[in-house]
Image (cartoon, rainbow, N blue to C red):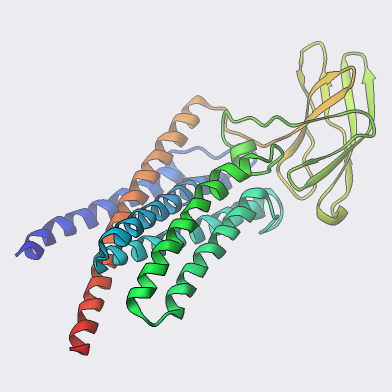
Length: 322
C-alpha cells in the first residue's frame, strides 16, 4: 500500500528533476555569457563544481549510515551506506573527467598533477579499496562490519583531500585560485635570479628592467621537466599602481602577472581570463546554484532507487537460501 502511494510522488519527482536539469543546461549556454579568453570552456564549471561537492556529501551519508549499522546491525543501513558510497565514487569520477576536460583547454594537457587533481585521484583509490574489501570477504556479517569501519576511516580523509590539502598550496593552478570571478591567489615574491613555482610552472626572474614608470620582469618559465621553456615579460605601471602586460604561459590560457614591485624584487602571480561583467557574474552564480540543486535532486532520486534495488536483491538472496 505504501509503495503504491509513493509511486505518483516518485514519478513527479523524476520529471521535476529531469526538467530542472534541462533548464540548467539551457541556462549554461543561453544565459551564462562565455568567459573572456576561454569561450565555452568555462561553462563546464556548472557541472564540475556540483559533482565535486556532491561526492563529499555522498561519502558523508555513507559514513553516517556506517555508524548506524555498527550501532544497530541492520542490513538496510549497510545497503544505504553502500549506495551512497557508489554514488560518491561516481560523482568523483564525473568531477575528475570534467576537470580534465577543462585542464586540457586551459593548461594544455589532460592531467597536470596539480594539487586538487592529485588529491581526488588519491580519494578515488581510497574508495576503490572499499569495493575491493567488500568483494574479498565472503562472510556477510563480517563484510558489512569491516566495510562500515573502513567507510568511517575513508571519510576522515575526504574533507582533507578535497578542501584542506589543496589549499595548503598557495601556487595551485586550480580554478578556485585563479579562475572564478573575485577569487585571488597570493602569488610569490622573487628577487633577481630568484626561482619559484606557480602551479606546475617553474619561474625564474632573470632581470628586472625599469623604463620610466614601467617595470618589466624578464622571467624564464617552464613546465614539468623544463618543457615548453620560454621567456615572458610581464609589466607593471608604477604611476598607475597596477599590472600592465600579462603574457600567457606557453600551451596555456593562464597568464603571468606582475602584481607589485618593491626594493627587494617583484611579486608574480597566475591570472586567468575572467568574466568581469556584473550580469555575467549573476548569471553564473545563479546557474551554478541551480545546477547544484538539480544534481542534489538527481542524487537522491538515484540513491533511493539504488537502495531499493539492494534491499530487493538481499530479499531475493535470502529467499533463495531458505
